[in-house]
Length: 216
Image (tube, rainbow, N blue to C red; front, side, top):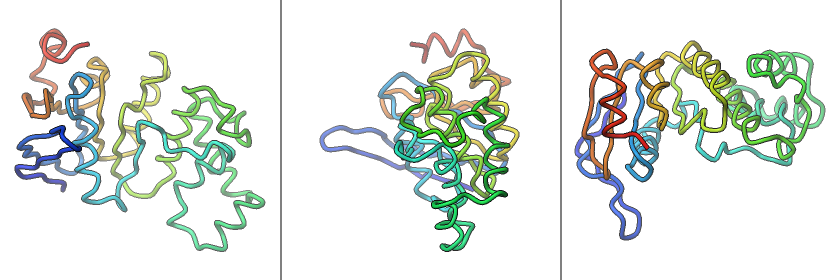
């Protein structure tokens, strides 16, 4: 489905990725792990750029419009599925059905009471959950997410990871949390200094091995 062959990436004088060959088949739950600066986000971006219109994305910086409400930010996930006039109406005066659809998603993440609150008033964890709800509002069955639960506590993290893995058939994540990667993904790709140093099914891996190589 997604494929890289001997790919490289550089920023100014810094080499971010070197000789990356990777195939991501449909229906797989895949996590990139590695220390900060290993190249996880860059690899996620290279794959995303192959099919940006087909992939729901949760970027590390959330990509929210902080002056708009939670409703409007989540609704943006379906802008491409609706005609312009319909989107404009919902910007000015949200319609009953879109409000119900967005509220149902927000209930999954305990944010329904923030429906019309400006995103800029939310905590970091609430903003992260808003970005996740926006991704779930998109059509398609592929999700890319860069540290999607970094601002959440353990219980919230498990709830969000479970919801994402249930909603999307194919999931590609950049993560620091080895325990969550092992629990919710079926394949782990380890990166170190811009190179793939591990690519294995999670069933063949132990937490202690990953912590020794990629733990903080």
